[in-house]
Length: 193
Image 1 (cartoon, rainbow, N blue to C red):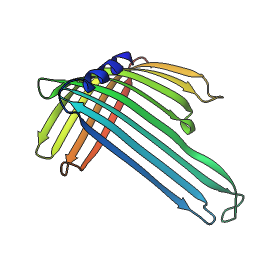
Image 2 (image 1 turned 180 degrees about the vertical axis):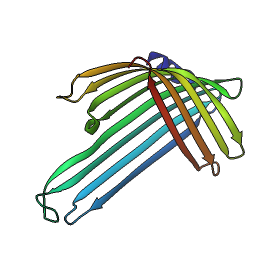
Image 3 (image 1 turned 90 degrees about the horizontal axis):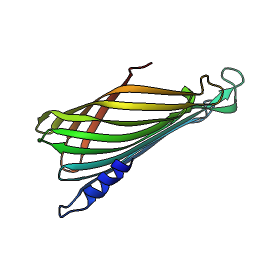
Image 4 (image 1 turned 90 degrees about the vertical axis):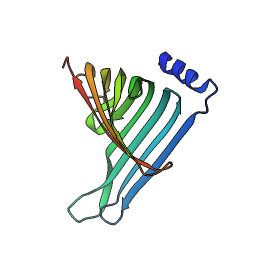
């Protein structure tokens, strides 16, 4: 965490003008009547780049509550949360030799319905721009992550700790200077489970 704070202070100091990126989304759905359900989701990103340095902060929250009927087709008599999940990540990248980067990140999340009260993943590794053609870019990274988990009360065991190989793949389509579409996926492969 101290390394990420040092990297951020290094990034913001100096004569170059930083390039900022801000993205925020909020969505939801509501079904009334005998369904009486609501779903909410939000996703936020704040990033800054200067020269070879970049810092990104991402966050996401999802909540779904559904109505419970006493009998099929009957009135809703109670509500139950079926999804309550959150996720956040702070990541620092240092680019070198054009397409390569070293990264350090700290991620945290929770998924109460999956039995995870909280999970933290400090990680480090290398990243590379695999393909960059026109408006399209494909990026990948590989690294090490150490996962610490605490489970919701009543789940046995109460906690877990894992060493992971981290693999990531990201696709970026830049429509213009202000608009881009980004999709990514990650795999944490526990090597000591």
